[in-house]
Length: 250
Image (tube, rainbow, N blue to C red; front, side, top):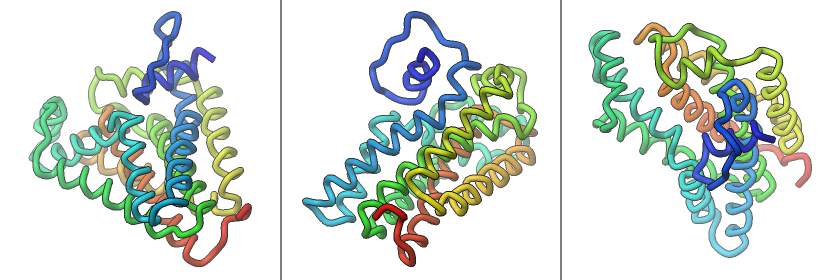
């Protein structure tokens, strides 16, 4: 349970305590499971509020609740990557921009776009069951995508949180964590898990491929961008599926 508590502590603002610092090798495989917990909370807020207010309002509040739970952790990485890749002219300059905590025009635009996409997708899903499943899938597979990205490309530099986490990963526990996240997604989404996994895989390949071209590999902020792109794409796919199909348990 130390790994789960450490992952909650790392990925969220939930005030949990561990007896001692937990190594990245222990907490990273738990990321998809923590994503499930976040997604279930966000989905429950959306479904519950949806009984009282219009779906668009419920979806908007649910997305905001997700931001509060995570402290916009991954959104910050997306914004930093947008600024670096959009404003830097060389790998060295882009890596330097990544070290700047301030956000520029590209970062603000990317951050706003991510939030807007999630709100509009949630607002378009009329079925409470489908909305709950969509949020669970988006948050679970988003974190899973970030974990998978750690194994797909070399680091862009020799230091950094993302680099140390990637180096510490143990293949067996990492695969087990990803499979568990996939199984949890399948439990709530049924056959929709196939298109969801395809969307998450596309996010990994596209963002990691761009990172390799722009800075030569992965950085911690790239992992945040992977999570955000995957989360958005899963919700986009969910909105399309919900418009034509019913979730299996509704």
